[in-house]
Structure formats: structure tokens, C-alpha cells
Amino acid sequence: MRPMKVLVVDDMELDRTLLNEVLTDAYPDDLQIDEAAGGVAALEYLAERTPDLVFLDVRMPGIDGFQVLEELRARRPATWPVVVMWTSSSHPDDVRRAYEHHANLYVQKPDSLADLDAAARQCIDTVGLVARP
Amino acid sequence: MAQTVVHGEVRPEQIDGGVAAALLESSPECVKLLDPEGRLRYMSGNGRTLMEIDDFSMVDGRHWWDLWPDDAESTLRNAVASAGLGVATTFDAACPTAGGTEKQWRVRVRRVDGGDLDGMILASSQDITDDVERERALAESSAEVDSLRRFGHLLAHDLRNPIRHVRLLAQRLQRRTTGAEVELEMLSDLVDQSGVALALLDSLAKLQIEGIAEQEAVSVHGLLASALEVLGPDAPELRSDGRRVSVVGNHGLLVAAFRNILENSVKYAKPGVPPVVELTVGRNEAGFVQIDFADNGRGFDGDEETGEVFGARVRQSNATGVPGSGLGLTLVELIVRHHGGAVSAHRANDGAVVRVELREAVA
Image (cartoon, rainbow over all chains, first blue to last red; front, side):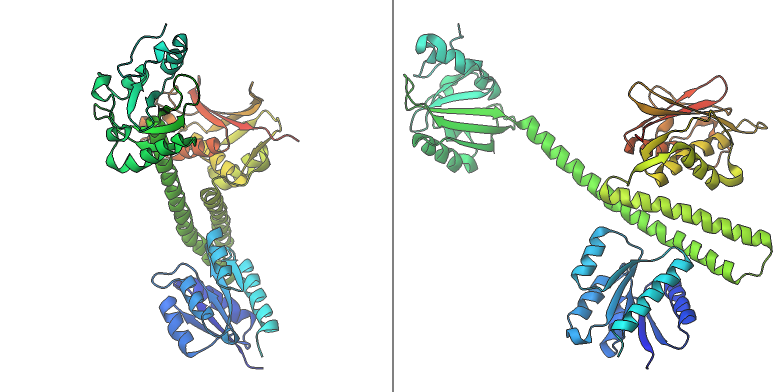
């Protein structure tokens, strides 16, 4: 089985690093993880490649996570990757907006490494079941 | 007997033995009688006062809408025409007085059916200027509150990120370090303290979104234990009368309030005197739990009657050399007020007493 392609979109380098680290530790041979440091970089990446799973931060300067999500969902549904909104915001408006634009999951960034590990594993395991050929 | 105030051809005091005039003159509103073509025939005394009209003959017989701004003419013509057809109408509009004072009016227009005034149009204008101004001020103030809430939520969000990062980095170090036990303890403290800060920020963010933080029954001694835990070795000695009671509140916010009160006792301790806080729990006449924090410190300046001690950005004159923003007690007051409670402070023989009153949780 080919490795699962994961894209981590976040303007915070530390958040990208921590998520990447946790995922790599948990699934050393099963994931191919790429990073995008913002909305523009994410759209450039997604113009050429289609990952299986996108961890997408919401509040980013320039093009934010919602704009990236809208762009992704404007494509043919068969090409939709699984999108997990991965954000510090717990504002109900953000949650509502995410699901209105067909995000698959909305996760508030965990406050501990143990929770981060558990949440990231849950996302990968779920995608592994439903989205990877 | 109603005072004769009529200068037009309609003289209500001559109708129904003066009863009609008495009724029209007793209204606090600006009451007018118009002929079916909309010409003014009568205006009550209160109406002339409200409209700052000294001499009714100046407007007697003029079309009612001629006294209004141009943009109101069609509304008034329609109202008079509708009334003529037996349909009463009400509308709000702005019209300055004869003296030029801007006013807002709620106007009711209807036809008089029967009696000597049969077929006349009765127009009664209520001065709603103050109501409109209050509504405008309220809307403005609501918009400001919404804007402050949005700002508060963004602030809580922006503060959350760096604190969360500190916590995650500390945990990352915990996993990797092979350092001495004391270093591991420090990292553990860092993780715990940043966790408390995050919980408080979440409560504040929730408060900003919903206007009210989640509340439940919380034990006062549990709150104090959490506050002392946060303060760690910097906590004062706490002596309690042992009474157990629960209040209705948000755990995170009340721990922050109690922590600030206890922290103040340490900050304002007398030099060389270990800070001690005596806790007394009681109930006041309104059925609120009353918690007194009496310390043995330097007391405080400021007018205890006006609550100056709680004023934002006011630091006590005896705060020289005391660390902090001076916002501690302001935060306490905001939190307690948010819970529908009250907070006050007064000097005692030795030190200061801060009294917090909160709703008791019914078992």
C-alpha cells in the first residue's frame, strides 16, 4: 500500500513541526508528509498535487484556511481530499463556517503532546479507513 | 373649567359643555383638530408648548404638512386622506418646533365620528425624542459591547497560541531531557501553570462569545485549593473557619479571582511579617454567600466607599516596589460582578478585608 499523503498547512512553524513530529513518530513508514507555510503556498501545492489528508489551520495571514477550503471544495468532488480544520479557534462561527464549506472535521489544536498525539492518530486512522485506496 | 386656548374657528370649549375641551387639553401630547382638507383648526395648550408656538393664529388654517419638513408631506397627506376614509394611522417622523428644536414624534391620526366635531381629523403627536435618543444610545452601546467582545475573543485567541506553544515545548523537553530532578520539576510546573492559564483564557473566550461563562456549583474550598495550588510557594498562609459551602460560578474565572485576592495579600504584606489570610464564610440577608478575606498586610489607600480600590489602572500609593499591573482587584470585581455578585474592600485593625458575595448553590 502506498504511503498516505498528508499536507500540513499552518503559518506557525512550531505547530507544523510538532504535528509532523508526532505523525512521523506514530507512523514512521506509512506517511508522506508535506508542509505549506500559509494559504498561498497551500494553493500552489494543491494546484499540482492531491493529498489524501489536509490538516488546515484557519487563521493565517493573506489567504486563510477558509479560502483554501473553498478553493478545494470548488473542485470535482471525486478529487476532494479529507480536510481537518486544525485551529486554535473555538469560535462557533468558525466551526459553523468550516462545516458549511464541507470540512470533514474541526479540531481545536490540543494543549498537550498526549492529546495532540491522540487527535492526530485518530485523524490518520479514520482517513486510512475511508479515503486511501 | 379648561382654559380657553383656541384661536381657530373650532372651539371645543363650546362643545358638550366644555367636556371636549377638557379632554383635549388634559392630554400631554400635541393634540390638533384638522378639517377634512388637512387644515389646522385647533391645537391644545400642551401642543403649543411642545411645538413652541406662542400665537396659534400664525398657523391657524394652514395645511398641517406645511409645518413639517418637505419629506414628511406625503406621509401626512396620506394619513389625513386615510383618516377621512375612516382608517386610523400611526407613524413616527421628525419635525422641528417653531423655535427650531429638533424633535421626534409618534403621530396618531383618526377621524372623529359623531357629535359636533363629526368629520374632523384628530391628530395627536407624542414627543418621543428622548425615547429615540435612548434607543440610539442603546444601539450604539450594544455595538460597542459587541465590538469589545470580538476584540476580547481575538485577544484571548492570540494569547492562547503562545501559551499553548510554551506548554507543548515544555512537554517536548520533558520527554527528551535527561536533566536533574529539579529541572524536571520546573518543567512540570511550567506545564501546570500554562495549563491553568489556558483554562482561564478559554473561560474568557467563552465569556466573550456568549456573554456568559459556563456556571455550575463549585465548592469555595475547592476554588481556594486550586488558587493556592496555582500560587504554589508564593501562597499566603490560609486560615479557615472550616465552613463548607458551594457557590454558583465558573471554576476557572473564580479561581482567577481568588488567586488575585490571595496574591494581593502577599504583595502587600508588611515587611518581615509572613502573610496570613483569615477566611470567614457566612451568608448575608439577600441569601448570598459572603466570603471575607482578612489579611495582616499593609491595607490599602483609596476611598473604600466609592470602590476606588477596584478602579482599573489605579495602583495604590503604597504599591511602591510591588510587582504587577494594578489590575488584579479590577479583574476580581469584573469576575464577581459577572457572576451577579458583589465585591467590596475595607480597612481592618490590621490589614485589609476583601469581601466577595456570590450566589449560593442549592444542593
